[in-house]
Image 1 (cartoon, rainbow, N blue to C red):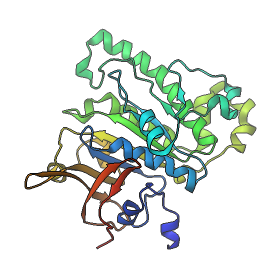
Image 2: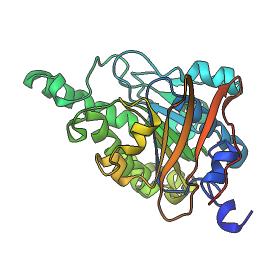
Image 3: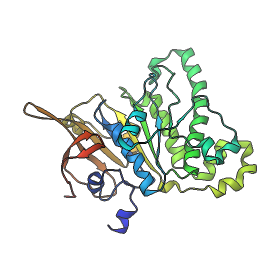
Image 4: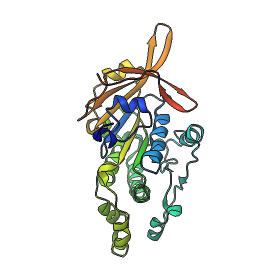
Length: 302
């Protein structure tokens, strides 16, 4: 493996890493697009679990689903990789001092919008509900900063953002707004400045700890799992990729969808975009088994 390949972030699936010329690029966003049930969350679990081998720490999950259900991360993680996820309580507001205590601050998953109801776009709310939502969102943002920062200072270097639902106009989506905040105010920001946003008036008294727990944002990996209305891979491939902030800002886009061969249905993935790096042009079938997603061919670069 070359030096450039060894610095890549593994997806947890060697054949997919091979399609991506060694893996994902640090400090960049990877978007996975596909319909419900196509295997996105399983891929997310394998990606997060691969951090244990590559960085010495598993990644974590930030679930933006607001309908009350979840993406079954707990079941998948336990079944696929024998990992019991530790969930951050929805009302968690730990003291600043507890940030540096792993047991008090390191959680594997946060599902802060679980009881928010179906709030995806502004059209879901009337004027009064929108004001209430803005107030709630401000509080959730503080919890979001803490969740990400606490994971990063305790060694996690990869995150999976799940639960992004389809909308007619991406610009109206609360979820896209929240992702933009996470991307620019947490993932791309210098660690000390994230700490300042979180600790505020208490920053000075924790400055020594902040310095001791510094991390490099250019080494972070982020996988964003977006649900689509399109089910067939062919329809996803034909979909414009320059619509929506997440797609336009993504470094890598992986499409997952169903395929048809006569009367037989299957699943396949395609790397639609891998900016700044070579990638395979193949459409590769896969299956989901007891150990997760497995590619059925051994693709390489062409």
